Image 1 (cartoon, rainbow, N blue to C red):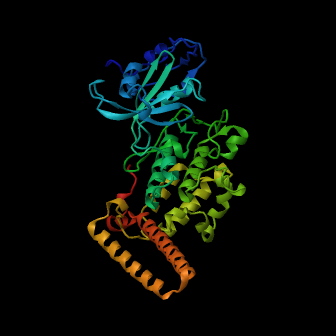
Image 2: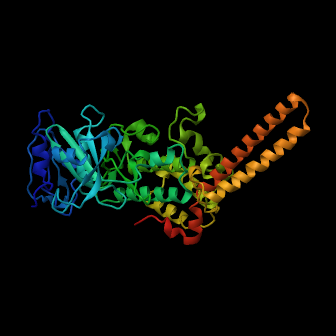
Image 3: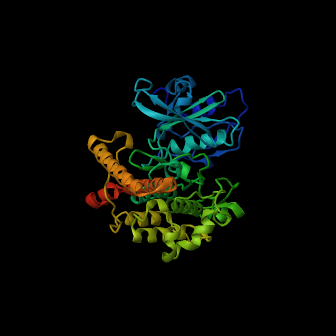
Amino acid sequence: MAPNKFTWKMLFLGCFKTRRSLPAPKIQVSNLTTSQRLSLSDLSNPGSSLSFSDFSSSIFNLHVFTLKELQMVTHQFSKSNYLGEGGFGIVYKGFVTDKLRPGLKAQPVAVKVLDLDGSQGHKEWLAEVIFLGQLKHPHLVNLIGYCCEDEHRLLVYEFMERGNLETQLFKRYSAALPWLTRLKIAAGAAKGIAFLHGEEKPVIYRDLKASNVLLGSDYNAKLSDFGLATDGPQGDDTHITTRVMGTEGYAAPEYIMTGHLTAMSDVFSFGVVLLELLTGKRSVDKNRPSKEQNLVKWARPLLKDPNKLDQIMDPRLEGQYSTEGARKAAALAYQCLSHHCKSRPTMSTVVKTLESLLELNDITIGPFVYVAPTEGKNKEEKETETETENENESHELKDENKCKGSVAEMKDKSRNRQHKGHRHRRRIKSLRSKVVHSDTALYKTLGTGLYSPRD
């Protein structure tokens, strides 16, 4: 086996030789073949010895990094490389060279560092290694490697240029995500979940939310953060019973009430994300009016009525979306958010529905307009504005000559200032409406292939 590649002995024996007391799990793998996936259920009874008989680590393809190497690629975990922070810990941007490891291409990476005092720990770190070390799919983030040195636990992922959906969807002072881009993101996330549910050993993701959907430069969506993922029920079992974990506003009601977890719990969470994409609102926001703070409770009754759909659609879209597509997407979200888990669609059905919406061509088309920054105005624009200002000044002088007395002059000047303010506000509003969603013109010209999710 190539040096610095993943082996179970390195992972479980090496990691537990630490200054910090950590449990050493037993791996029962005697019945596994190289074509089978090792799951969390194969780990049992902490403190027992390890058995490697009849098991090959060739199903893993992860690089093992040292802490010193990851400090180097992130410039000592510099604040300038800070990307974000979650329950697991802080994430830093780094860059690995092809000289660091044989077979490792030079590329930017995201390095996630476990916070020893955080809400997640070694178990969640291990879950990410087990799942993402074996599960590979275009809509799952690629785990490149890990570090397990003393008490340090780090994970190294591919770098996603556009960050996460939460940032892209809810950030202020920027153009809103266009309609077709939102559908592409939803379809990509749905494909990732459908893949997990369709495994021979089904996987329940359990923590689907906007911040866990990462976006590439082309808005290709990938699921990240598998710390709470778990193996789903198999055989005649209908559910698994587990401690309720997840994020407020996304967890399915039956899971919260009973602890019974099924694949349909993920479907509900997806419905929440889809609803966020439709409305442009967070799943929970204490700053909204009391009746609207929980997005699902407020918006779900409106989803089934097409006549009320405009009340919840993101106003930043400015009506530039497919009317039929919005209606069908709302109906899909309504089904996913059903209080009865058996009434929810499967994720494979969700994928087919979303893909069909990407083919609709009744979207309202806006002009493709590039608006240059005000500081970079060209000579012609400046001359035009100068002429306009001169004309306005001429009119103002004539008006002033007609007026008698200082009181009349003050009133005229006040009115002129007010009119200028109105014209300025109207101009800003006009420019704003032209900038948003200008890529819909490209959709009309090039067709939906420009936005279709990758398989």
